[in-house]
Image (cartoon, rainbow, N blue to C red; front, side, top):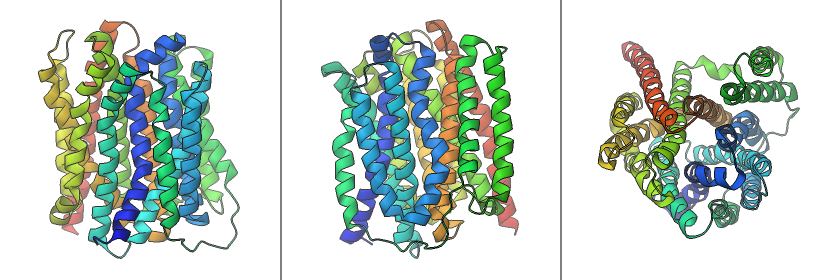
Length: 453
């Protein structure tokens, strides 16, 4: 288990998650600087964040399916290349529109990297449950460490150089991951019919994009505006179309038989709750620290460390915790901490001392860090290893879609001046607590049912 092969596989695949997570935390920190450079309003900033998560979410299903059919190693390498080139494009973007377009390209690369990296891990350690749990814990910890270091790294780069350097840092990581991937094993892939589900992918893409766009533009144009209202109606129509198409598709991007597992369904819901609350709250808190408390970029980066650092410790310990307590107990305890952390944010004011924010920041990240590795391990254990890429993609799709919606909804709550941002922190905390408690009840009921069987 401690052979060079184990370390090499985990390190190579973890670099993908490192970049995906690093980009989220760094970009959130740079929002005021991006706004100043392009004279952008909050809706433009929401697009800068959500262009990435939206492309990530809408292409994840196809990427997972393609990874299973064409080979996870091949898709992993291609994703690395795309992400690196897109990062260079973001760094040299001349205007906000160009930046948003290259952020979409980054999302495409991430959509290819993440499910394929998890598929590689699951394939290598499919017959070693404890080793797989440890590998997933280390993979998750690497991304969490990147998220924890991201604000500090971003703060230093912005203070000493320019916000554009936050994208350039991805390039050497991409290169390292791409070169290391050549030592990974080549898996056998299906040689059968490989017709792609274009109708399913298109209807899913249009539905999610219309929904996110309507939520982002709603506060500015008004939800009664024909374009916004029409976008919401159109998204519903596209979702219905997507479900109808998938039921008849020969090779659907969303295999419905995955949902035959109660564990898979419960964990899918959990992933959406965690990401929606966390991503949306980080967006609002980035504005709060810099525009309400008037922290510098470096000061905000340092302030964010406990909001992400709790992931690292809890992720590293996750394999031992899962081995001792199983999948569901760490999730239940983590959800409880997650909700408690958001309750602690009610101390936020226009002059809140940092020590009052430190504890809730740390509790939020530690709770999420306990739940996520158990969630991922549970999802991979609930499906056949030949569908691990698709299952990983479905999970990540639900998480990234919820994350994009969280940024859109919570960002709308905080649209306006410093008073509106502060009010947005309260609203985001209330919504996060309520949704987390509902998820906790659902997970607890499912856990009781499994114990009685």
